[in-house]
Length: 332
Image (cartoon, rainbow, N blue to C red; front, side):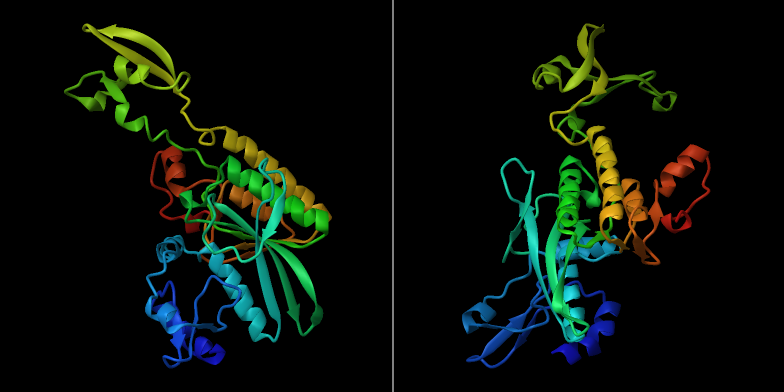
């Protein structure tokens, strides 16, 4: 299977295959293999019933999303590590790190955890590998953005998880490898409020003249939780409007608190630089704080189509007032 995998790898890449499951054997002696596992490409015995009941992999859409971002689904990197270490005559085992307590202050290994079970855009593994050069085995901590979760952006939960994973590696003296593909700090929208916004135009018949303010009807405002928005009532043509000064939202983790978390993880990455070996593998675009994190590591491996940028080219064009840049690749 190993030789066959190598032989067809280039063809599969050219065809942009996102996932491959192999079924080998007669009805009485079946074996299957699939990616996103440290067992890949090792075949595992299965029953005929299990093979016949094979369904569409629910992770396939996430793999396609990662491919569109120019990267690879984060869980599949574990399988890639295992495949290449195995091809060199070694072994590779990985156990996903998850929160080890309700307060989310420590991480613990989760042996056998199924791929894709993450609820945030950051994942990590405690990995153990052996090689012919080091048969006694080595350990590393692998941390990765999940670009399929809100474009791999950094929110409060992602910042806390990244910082804790980095401390986990530092406290054990383990090298930390960061697989990067992200869109920087998350500045979100209050989706539940978007349908309720109304616009007070300077001239309703000519919107190009701009608007005076955004507002909510009195009924919509009063239906919101206290503190979700800030502003004041206005009376216009007998209609009571709540003119908006600020939208606070009803969820934590969509605003400036994410920028504060960016400072936290930048500081933690700097400490890791001093305490242990750190390496970043930039597999796709890495923006804002994502770019800083890569630059703060000991070594960086950067793909040709994995730009490190502080902001997108569209934002720079708006700032400059003309179309200067046409792609992210011109920025870094």
